[in-house]
Length: 626
Image (cartoon, rainbow, N blue to C red; front, side, top):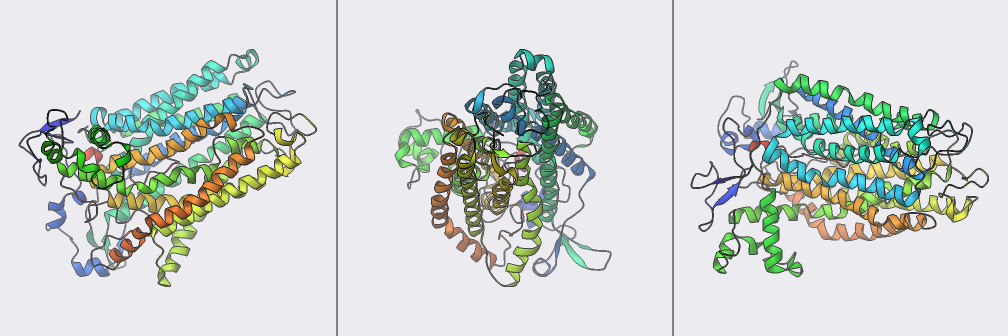
């Protein structure tokens, strides 16, 4: 619940401008911020505090990771495995009819090029269902993240999400039963379960990684001596980076569970394909029950997001859309400006001038996210177009929806090459490879992947026995073009590699430059940009079908090439600024590999407005796959 504080601002808070009450997040009794976000602690003396010389010369290492953190990583694996066990199957289940000559459970007859199916509603409906499902998964966390901060706390909302998840998985198994498939009555349980799964994932998604970081107890840099005798700095940022690498590893391993379910739909039927995610889900409630009394849990302390929307509303009402991005746009919501304009009775400001400045700085820092939708469209293909392309190619026993796993596989395989090969080599050679240059590389790679999809679809249409209607349940000859589906692994893999170049530096820029009290807003904008990509796919449902698929891939590829150039020339100044910071004695630069130097407070992200402790770890480095 949001709280109003009058005349008793917490330490470090500046008074409100004017006579307005300041409504903001507050620290509940008995709760506290971690030391690395408390300037009074970091600026004072404590045991093991490194000197300036030690900060400059000693190696930094990660601290101990508590067992509970590893258990939360397992929780994330179970949830992502059960989610990704279902998500790739949606298009086939909705698009294709029960295969002729199959076993009646959705599996096609062996030795054919047919694809598993169930409802037979066609490509347009299949695209609309899969895109609306994913859009909800990325749009609803804005609501549920606010609920956790302001009303329920994280743990309770995670448990509610797990409950909804469980009901959805049970209904999915019912939708895959022989009787319902044969009678055409599988639609109701399937659609209820799919959208229930979206709601459950949206409850879980914005809360689990902050809960993980809340368990990190090593929260100040300390000088320690290793068993080898070497003196090092035990660094909380290095600890955060290590635990988040474990977290993301579990996400990508969980993503591979789609391989098992894809083969199950192909060779056994939908009931087994939907049973496997339920089995993977079952440890979730047991793990959450076991951890409950042992977790560090922050109570709800309010949320700044409602006030962010109020600030936006006032700026738009007073300035209009045409003033967006122009000088003075954000000033229109400052209490001092409202008072000077004599509009106190019209607009009630529940914040101070600094809060509006924090909002402005956050939107500036997250401007790079505006380019994420085009990267995502080229990464995976617009809508379900990549799935429809896969149905036109020779599978020779391989499930058509298994090929998308090359996206996650490329991330797992290529991340160590970047972190332990390319980036250290560039440092040794003295080559500065800034965050904007890396993001530009990623955008260019995703465009290249889009070109790959376009070329493949062109030749699939050219070689298909049904020509430009090859994905529309073609029954002529073998029904597919004489092109192996494994060619699709190339654009999928290129898209995964592009994420490594885009996501980590983009999140690093946003989190290191946006005020620390606005991390919830950073996460909301990040997720919203992904939701926009799915909204575009949903809006284009009527044309994501034969004979338009080649242009469905080619259009985003052309747009991606143009926007890559626009992005670089718009944000290249950030690379110059980061280079200057990297030469300063204060260590505020972004590392090439990951989350270093974005966890705590620095000269770039400090603010006197403090979030409640529950918001300190808002969605650090959240990726689209989480």
